[in-house]
Length: 80
Image (cartoon, rainbow, N blue to C red; front, side):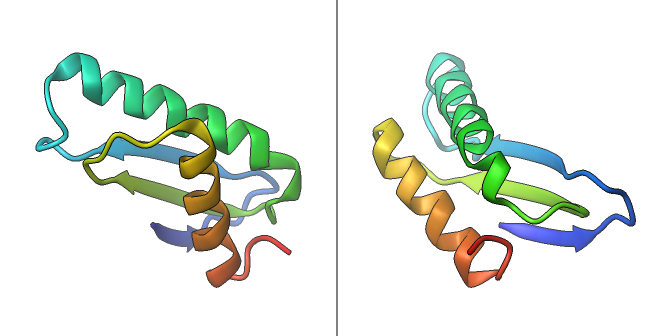
């Protein structure tokens, strides 16, 4: 994850799978799951940042992605 302050009272989010993540269908599914994970965590994330989540290859479930996003956001001190 990359992050930067944006000076706004809300977050802007980018969820991008790598090109090596399979075909277009698999990349779009990974992106959709990533966006839904962000929507689930959104009330707990500190506002005012631009966030870019880079999704690496793997057949991860929604719960596994949720755990990954939560871990990264806690390490960045954006989520309690």
